[in-house]
Length: 271
Image 1 (tube, rainbow, N blue to C red):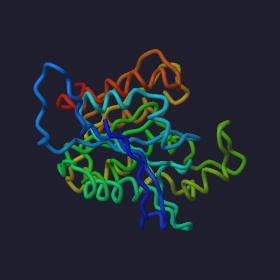
Image 2 (image 1 turned 90 degrees about the vertical axis):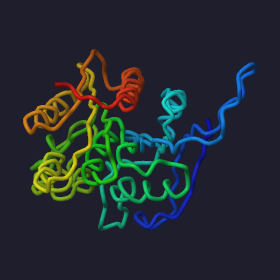
Image 3 (image 1 turned 30 degrees about the vertical axis):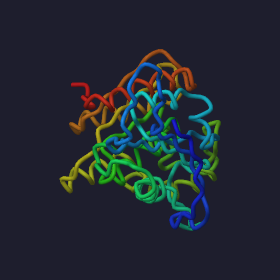
């Protein structure tokens, strides 16, 4: 497994950024077994997003992603979310959504031996990164065949039309207004996953397959169930799983393994 940290100038962010990558290219030589030829098919890829207060090192530090990437032959790219929910900040010129949903895909495809096929390209994440994966997987659906969303912070359900003084115990009205914009205009905007789904349906565009998981004791269970119910009403294929668990790496380690297995086996959704 090759591990790489890449620094490059992002036009979307208007500055130098960095991301971590895992690339299952260097196969070990095992005594008694014939060496595998270097000629390999292009790799599947997943752009894996961290949660609130985390960094691009979280997945490498706290999860089994290196082992799983090797097992399933996925190239894994881990950018930093910087507590901005992977949304564009047009006032500041930090276009996080465009960066992870478009520019990073195009840049890594030019740099590494990746499959160019939409069905081999995924976006995933946990908590804030789960929302970022849903939002940008739908906003840039032409790039992604699948979305993996664990314990997703689908906050538009909670903060739309919030008033000054609102706080959820993690952040407050000023923060949410800075990140999501005018909260009275949030519903129906390109930050609203339901609106993005409906736009794709109206255009007759392909919607990425979606895998969701959330713990039954997770404080975000209600918004995950609500989005699942919406997808099912709209007949959008979704694989959804709940099991005992809270908002922690014990849960995410179990379900990132199951999600990558789902991704590698045809992504058959629940009926």
